[in-house]
Image (cartoon, rainbow, N blue to C red; front, side, top):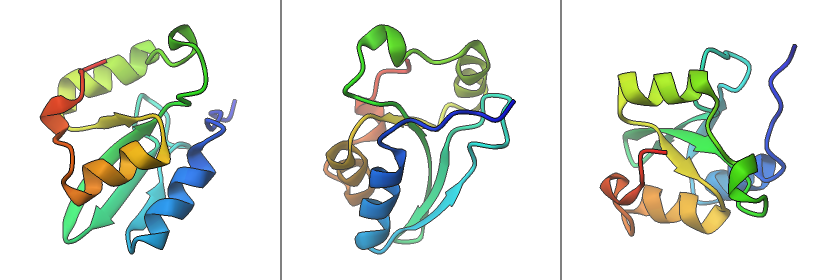
Length: 100
């Protein structure tokens, strides 16, 4: 069963590419792997995309995503274009992101 993509993922990917980021979609890997690998200014980011327009109950991490986040400690959840760009450009810190 293919993994679904959040409705805002294409918009976030396009916006990140517009600012010069390289974006690789990882959503088909499964096993809790975050949706995107992003390279920007020689740094790599693992981004899990959630749709900020949906209620919090629909944005919850799956058990596999929770496990991945606990093991890797580096993925960041983004819910909008602005949020994704803020993290990549340094206007927000990954430490500011709640674990899940």
